[in-house]
Amino acid sequence: MVNMTLAVPEDLKKLMDKHGEVKWSAVARQAMWVHAQKLELMDKLVSKSKLSEKDAMEIGRKIKQSVAKRHGL
Image (cartoon, rainbow, N blue to C red; front, top):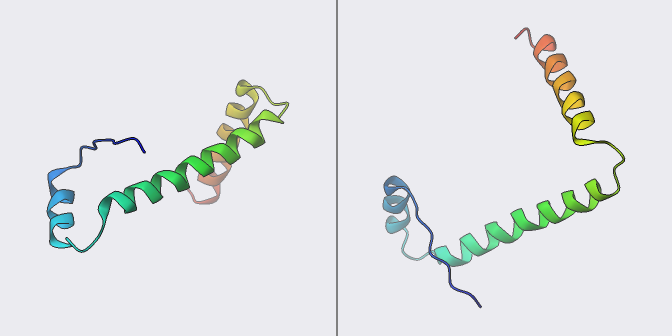
């Protein structure tokens, strides 16, 4: 296994220090696995897409406009 060093904000470190019983490296490892698996799924979905990045951005813009309009923003 490879070692990694992470920087965390001071307020997070204080919270972590209050809970020394937690194996924070295991928490971080699990969070990274979950995020990496989501990215892997996204990569698989995107690889089959026929949309260009420009098309996807345009669809996203239209969705945002629609949501904003619906919520009176």
